Image 1 (cartoon, one colour):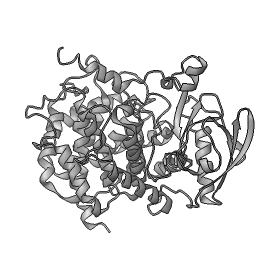
Image 2: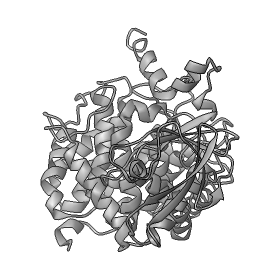
Image 3: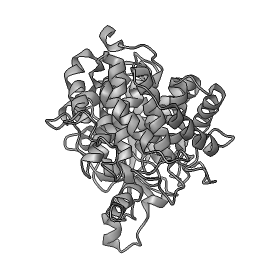
Image 4: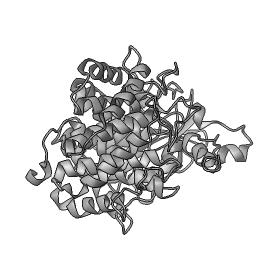
Length: 480
């Protein structure tokens, strides 16, 4: 018990997002609104610069801030303006419904995309002090965003900007700093590393190797003790994700010096598994022994990639964990939070990771097909995943690319507005969360996750990583 009690604040930080209140509401003495309940959301305004706020059941975007010298500032947009229409069309209502992506943000993103594809002129209708104004914003003509095409100039231009920002924002040791300590830093570094690796550029090899060195740790055991019991805490998250990055790195480069580290991480997850195949955040099963299926799916993805890289996988551990996932998977293909009937609203990360693992291992063809169909049917809710919009969008997108290409193309087209609003004037990405709990992403660090999410979505069209369908080893050695 002495070991577990200090974890409670971290778990609350990881899994919960408290009610938030805007500065305007505080000044007006308006009762708090709860972001976790979907009452409101904040979003970047894409290449316009700045950030805006949408509120449930309202058809407007409140301008919260503006970047210096951006095109919207030059056109006369001001902080406090309320955008009510773009390109002459009023916005639809913002909805709390996680299955609904239409709304003011999608409408604005689509209008920006159309302007950049055609004339370069975006007309906004705004309210300022109850007076309706028309503003015309000049944007560069960049062509159409077709993120499902590997050679789309606009998509790949954005991806290059993301990678440039990733390289610029690293710490000297090659890692990307989280908000809450080194365990979280390892997790977000692995995600950012995958985004950089997915570009497939041999010039990135020094940076990619530095990431491997950081994740392997000074003793090359991935910061895990010889007996696998330390650290405890939330360590299963970074243990699995570190091994996923290292495995993809070995598959890309053929550099086998990292196999002992990956093997240690794989063995750790086998050792930490309960007799019933369940996991928790750390060394014991969570939630009163009910387990935590997202750790199972992380472990399966690690094992599947590690097996491809050349490690030995504990088949009994795989089988026990798979039985838990099988019991937790509904007829619709979605993987529940645990084996009890908990529903599927946040299932895309679990389902995506497990579909990937089964595809990589070439097992359970019917089941992984069913999972791919679930992801296609529910791709609009992909941002909702364990208080982490990031892993839903990353692994849901990856699984669609690998097991359901038709669903992946539909998904990428449906979310083009999202990528457009993430794209900043300097070429980097800014974070857009889900409609509910984004506390886990805050824990990891939203600025870096924005680059990881958008980068890996765009990398999916290139198909270099094994999670995106590549089955070739040493593929980077042969890259153009």
